[in-house]
Image (cartoon, rainbow, N blue to C red; front, side):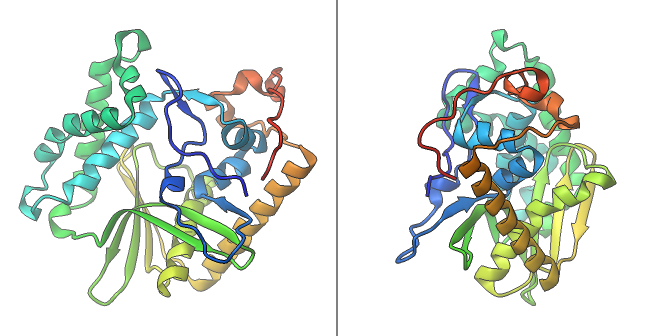
Length: 299
């Protein structure tokens, strides 16, 4: 199999596309020839646009730093670290005080991130910091962290399907009730999607629910998306039928990726998200020409 790309900075102001730290944590599967690995983000890329999947996973094209994405990374780090504090100290004021230290640690780990707030980047640093504070403050209107004791934070999970496809990814938070009930929580610093996009948003959570069910033998009681951009919480109660359907869908996506790889058929899917794509200039749907495929190409 060809490995998924790891998170690495390629140049100041750019990040490696398809960035996923999962490869750093993935464990060898003894005695099994794994056919490939898939995360919910990479599966989502392919379902959104096969050409986008190719650009990010096969070509590994760099993408400009996104202020929104980096804000999400910083806020996620603060919310992860918040639960290291005694419950009584988990306040909005304390969370705001944790922002700059969290940013400094991230820049130390990925120096390219520092380019985001440099003057020549064009990003209004004051406004960016204000947006970080705003979404953090909003979190405290949606949950009371003084009453929560997560079982896991930033949990790496993986599961090998019978087809020998490895599913893997990171879960923001796992809560376990005294009766063993599991709640899977993911933070989003953007706005909640409209009803027509809810299924796409829930696919990631069902993916995690499937892996946790397979590894722990318990169907999660709740899948919860916390949208800090709009102050909304999307909750979904899965069952075995849902998770089995998700397993079939993931397998079908992988088979489609393999077909596209063999046939070298990476068709663009033009849609409303195109305006957000960093690779629009290379897309045939917008008059561009993709770079030659690297050789050899594996799924």
